[in-house]
Length: 396
Ligand SMILES: Cc1cc2nc3c(=O)[nH]c(=O)nc-3n(C[C@H](O)[C@H](O)[C@H](O)COP(=O)(O)OP(=O)(O)OC[C@H]3O[C@@H](n4cnc5c(N)ncnc54)[C@H](O)[C@@H]3O)c2cc1C
Image (cartoon, rainbow, N blue to C red):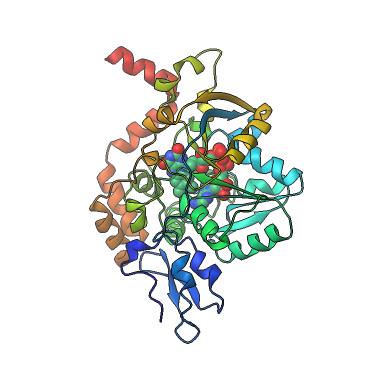
C-alpha cells in the first residue's frame, strides 16, 4: 500500500491527496495535538500513487518569481476595518463575485471549525474576510473547484501558499478562469488548539464566545485580537495577554512542516501574494505622515507573480490607494518572504503540555511566564504606531 510520507514533518495537510484519490481511500485524521494528517484505508487503496504525486510538500509545484510589487490600501474604509491588512482580498473577491464568479477561502462555522468554503455574493464575503491564525481544512473543495472551472465559472482561490500549491497539483493544468492568491504565511497552529483556547476563555470568563477577530483594528494595525461574547461584550486578546496569539506570533505552536516550509521564499505559488507591508515606515516614509496613508487601518503588500496577477491588480487599481514598490523593500520587513519561521524547542514543551493536560494548562503556564508584560503590552496597544516611533526616537 502507498506510504505517503516517512516523517510527519513531510506533510502540510493541503488536502490534495484526499481530493485526488479515485477510491476515496484517503481521509484526514487528527494527531494528539489536533494537526491533520492523511490516513489511507488499505482496503480501498489501489496503489495508483496519485496521492503521492500531488503532495504539495514533497513535490514543489510550479512557482513564479515576483514581477511587480505594490503598497496597497482599499479605498472602502468599512471593508478595510474588517480586513486583516489593507483589504486586498475583499476588493478582488468582490469584483469576482459581482461579475458572476465565486471566491473560495477560509471561513469559520459557528463552532470555530475553519474550512475552505465557496462564496458567491458580496454580503457573504464577510465570512472569508480577516485572517484566522489556525489551519483551515480544504476537505473536498478542490473537487468542487475543478467542476466549477470546467463549467466555465470564474474562481478566485485564496489560501496559504501550500494550499495554493496543493490545488494546482490536484488540477494538473492551468485554467484561464482561475485566479490564485497566496498569503504570506508564518505557519499554522491546529484548529483544535484554537477551539480549546476559546473554551478556556469561555470557562474562565463564564461567557459564550460567538465571534473572534485576530486583528482588531481598534488597537491600530498590529496583531491584537478581540473575542466577542453572545451578550455583546468584548474580551481583549492582545498579543501579550492571549496565550494563543502570543504563542502563534512567537512561532511556538505551528505544524512541524511550517518550520521547513518550501514556499516561505521568493518563489510564490499564487498569481499574486498578499500580506502586511511590515517595515513600510523604513521603506516608504514618503507615503506616511499627515497627508499620507492612515497606517492605523492596515497596509498591504501585493506581489504579482504572473502576468495575470499584474493585469488583475491594474484592472482594479481605482479601488485602491496603490503605489509601486519592490520585492526587496517588501521582503526586508517580512521574514516569511525569505525563509520559514525559526524552530524553537519550546514548541515541544508547550504542545506536550497541551496534549497531556489540555489548553487550560497551557493558559496557566502562559500567565505564569508572561508576568508584567501583560500590562505593559496593554499600555503599548493604546499608543498609535506613529507616536510610538516618535517616542522611541526621542528616547534614543
Ligand atoms: C496563518 C496565517 C499566517 C500569516 N502570516 C503572515 C506573515 O507572516 N506576514 C504577512 O505579511 N502576512 C501574513 N498573513 C497574511 C495576513 O494576515 C492577511 O491575511 C493578508 O495580508 C490579507 O489581508 P487582506 O486585508 O487583504 O484580506 P483579509 O480579508 O484579511 O484576508 C482574508 C483572506 O485570508 C484567507 N484566510 C484567512 N485565514 C486563513 C487561514 N487560516 N488559512 C487560509 N486562508 C486564510 C481568507 O480565506 C481570505 O481569503 C498570514 C495569514 C494567515 C492566515
